[in-house]
Image (cartoon, rainbow, N blue to C red; front, side):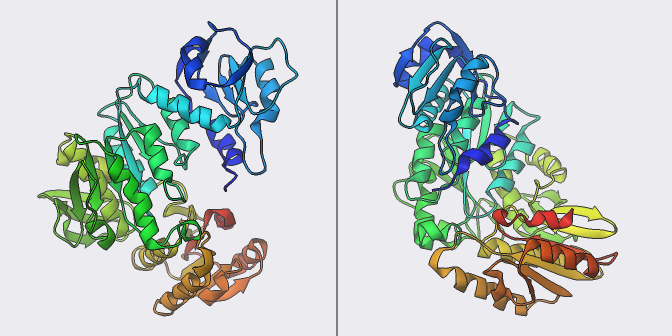
Length: 453
């Protein structure tokens, strides 16, 4: 189990849940024991953070492994919460509506499902081992000026993030672009039960979250849950260069639309040309230019283009929109500092994304000297050592000036290993020169982006 709650407190302050109504409207949804009740009190928005709660919000005391938001419910009531949903009894008597629920998160999910049914927006669910966030951001970038579109913020992609995103939509929202990620069988099925996607994108099937899902086949089954949840009048968009996805069939009632770089498909990139950094290609006779590094971003852009075209946008318009797209924070993010080019790709890491990032950096990013700073890939389970040794073998075939590593598993990569991030940073200052290009790649928990500060 992950302790998501503390991480979401910081990110939650950047969103604005728009759900509103009266407490009496949602009594059957909350379906929790209550000690005090003022039925006709209006509410607007939800909060999981008592520090920034606004008067009239519904406060949910979300519990994590090392965190319990119910401890702050009385503070939320004093600040004007319309109601609190908590897992414990409170000493407060006259502050307002108090609901008891064994699992406030489950109540939040039910409320999001209730609100979703009142929205007319179509929802796009995005799943896959790699590229989900970039595809989500590309789709949002393409549609945002055409219709009112909402995208899930940063990593709001799980059992807490999905309902929070849906609660941010208002009745005028026409399109919701929702990333979906779970690390257990049946997880995406549960998310789809809340989100009710009409369209789905599955980017690829790879070795991510192997600690929990164990096998590639289980990864496939988890992502497939999105396909099985789509309605007959929707559509599933898949990358047919991925052998696992080419085999998708059975129990899928929606139409399937394919995109690819190599295999035949409905939307196939042609005349691909490297711009170093960036890429040019043609799609159905239309010239596309991507001003972001990474060959893999061609497939990501094809996912966005195929969906946008199928939802009525002209491909020429899509091409113009994607020309101005830039990747998000810590995803092949390019930073220039003191004459040195840093490429930060440390939002997450697994074997496939590690190889892709290294290849893109070495072949596309200019620099007098290429320096790799690599850390551990987490959540790979019992085969973690094997996966890290495989990266070491991969690196032996590549040319670069220096390889610096940190983390217990990254010793398998080779190069110069440092026992801590601080030790690596101190030595990095002595090594770097003007004109260098530096790739920083590791799982998010290592926080290696700090090395570029």
